[in-house]
Amino acid sequence: MKIAISGKGGVGKTTLAAALARVFARRGARVLAVDADPATSLAQALGVPPEDAERIRPIAEMKDLIEERTGAKPGTYGGFFSLNPEVDDLPDRFALDVGGVRLLVTGGLKDAATGCYCPENELLKVLLLHIFTERDEVVVLDMEAGIEHLTRGTTSAVDAMIVVVEPGQRSLRVAATIERLARQLGIRHVFFVANKVVDDGQEALLRRLLGERPLLGVVRASAAVAQADLLGEAVDRAAPELVAQVEGIVERLECALAAK
Image (cartoon, rainbow, N blue to C red; front, side):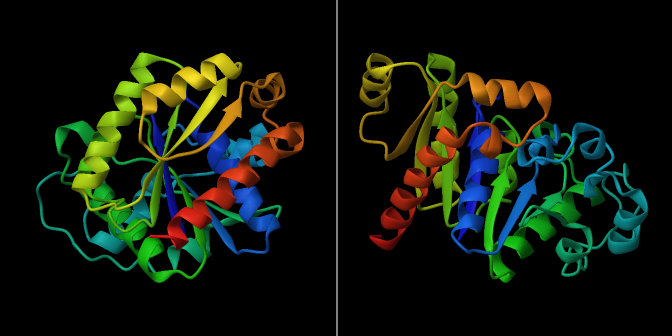
């Protein structure tokens, strides 16, 4: 199963991605968690100490590797470079084992909103396509916040996209745009998860505003999750109640995909 996590910045994409990866791993699956967000915070959410997480070098910043595989120096635009670079070895070469979850930090696409045609982007696009289509494992992709990256088509091979929303009109507007772009890319299964929900009344309102959109679950606002983020601790260990809620999300996701 290949899952992409998207949403407006700050809604809790990375927290959900880390918890999903842990739940799938506990269920016995081989899991590759991919951090494709330029903020690269998935390592800390999985429990990598902050000082170690800061030393992880995203593939997007590996200039020698990019030049070796594409034939062009990073930062060049519009020149000649390979459109089909060799990437098959990169996940196993650079992924780190974090308590039973394999973590690959790719970093984000460069200048996504400006139509960057450069070797860095080509390598990342081919790498993500390889991960989605060729690897036999559960993949959880923590995407860049917002919507610009979706125009690149890098997510078109995923089995499902989960759009994280929080209580707020801006989050809901971005989520609606993400859903539209995802469907334009051919992603058949777009689901939603509501995060940071305070109480039953807020949950009821969010459900009404989402309408017929498929909602996999509701994650309540948690001081333990906020504290884990502040201290750089693994969210699943700091907030076991989060894991219980995400287990329900995984079960509903599996049922929904099996039924379609």
